Image 1: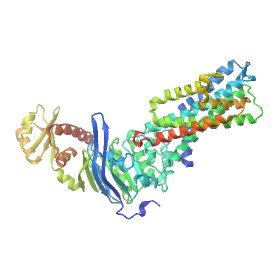
Image 2 (image 1 turned 45 degrees about the horizontal axis):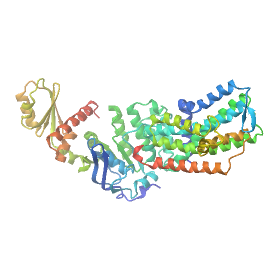
Image 3 (image 1 turned 120 degrees about the horizontal axis):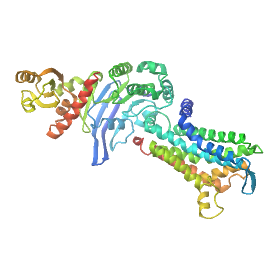
Image 4 (image 1 turned 120 degrees about the vertical axis):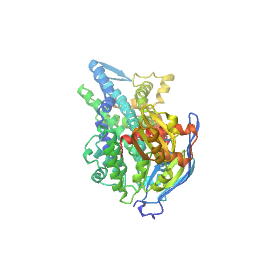
Length: 329
Length: 246
């Protein structure tokens, strides 16, 4: 029998994980002392921007990368033992699926490697890819491939499902179906850890968010706590020929960014900022006020406010946000 | 051995038509063209006087088996390139099962290559008797090809998919040349001794069982055995080296 027999307290324990790589500009400290404990049955989001150490942490959790220090216990076992018991289902960040097979054949093959797999039909149903069953794996779109990879992770009927950026290549509909499948899966009492850089996904689907930055855990708690800590809001609008300095000087505005005619104000107090904005710049239109983006949460929770870092991060963050908005979940 | 897993591996082998055909076509085409244009010629191999197509068939059988075996590496590299090997490491699939299935598929390819050459040979009038020579030759070829199966798996894990064409082509040319598969080695001198140390030389000797040569001597078994051990260790190391590299 798989380790479902273990007591519920024996979930996932990562203790003092440290990992450095040798990069072109000297050592890169990818993970610098991460402690995470996850109870069996929890759905946890590992949230952070690219380079936060999420993938490295997941790789160490899965035993693909050997930590420089620290250890990993999965249901009281080492990663290798847990994998050998078929207790882990994983969907890695990169990778396609095996060619020259149909989706059904692929799932049948993968299921055959595990002691207690789900049936192929059940997996197809759960992953919402019944219509793709007889499709060749080479004839799938990017989003469909992601969902097939998710099905590959689920067919093992694992106690822990570890997903690294699972929705990256998916379109709107794909995301919806993906998270619906996920809910159906977690309702069976499975433990799920997923890495993401979408705050919205972490917010909507995780019981708990672990926020990582620069190789460390900077916040760990229910999403409401993280959001409260993130605080600020963002105002977007259209304002041709905007005077950036004047905008930045408005009440409640922390920083300003401009893309063509559109402006983005990162606010500490969006209520004051929007009043002042409409007063000083009556020409502004298409206003939108949104809650804190991941980047704002990051800046606040990590205290990383030095000018250069902020600019660089802000730019990346807005790109991410913009792309995310293009395909709202 | 996991039969479901093995079944799909074999299915994939046959379904990838381009790779399937390219692993088999070269020795077969060489045989058809060269033996075809020398159908009525005779050749002296050692102290045997025999029809040229017979000699060329057994030579190409050993060469084809070697190429088919090394080509297994291309399939490994392809699977690595799409991250599949990494995914497999996260399943309970045992390393032993993974390897034995890879050996099985490489063997299947080698057998198909040998069979195609036998069929082509017979259609050109090649007759080998007693029948035991067919069996002795085939059996010994299947032992002698094992270092190349393991070598293919190793290079598939060590090199990228882009490097596989040159590696398979270059590797088989290197061993084909040194092992006397391209043309007979001299009876003495450095090239002879270097040739004798290669597994391809013994693969050629294995094929000559079909034309009445004796089976391997102790030196042959020893050299082939050493190559099997060395290439298997290399393949094992190449897989375990760094899980994150795949």
